[in-house]
Image (cartoon, rainbow, N blue to C red; front, side, top):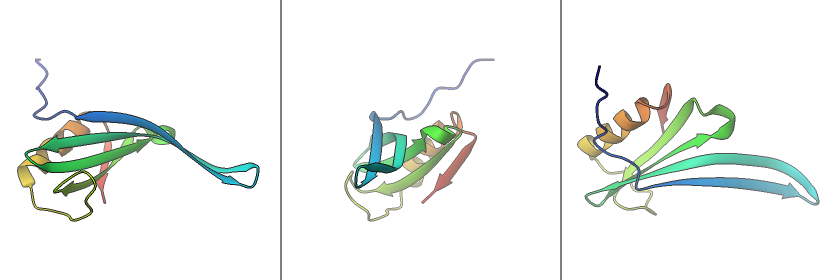
Length: 94
């Protein structure tokens, strides 16, 4: 069976580690991948944490990368969700 092609792929995949220090002690550590999707002036971000690479959280769509204003872009959102569902068993939205 031939594998379907993705209608969208991430414009960027970014690996980050956030550390929260309390004095000289490490309080919390977050190791994650951010998937950045852009098309036609619309933007979505998805994040998956290394301690659970079986799940991902989708944020957006937004009109641009640094916006928090949600927009209605059903075709763009569907394509992003399809991409994520092919790779993660658990896709949630925020």
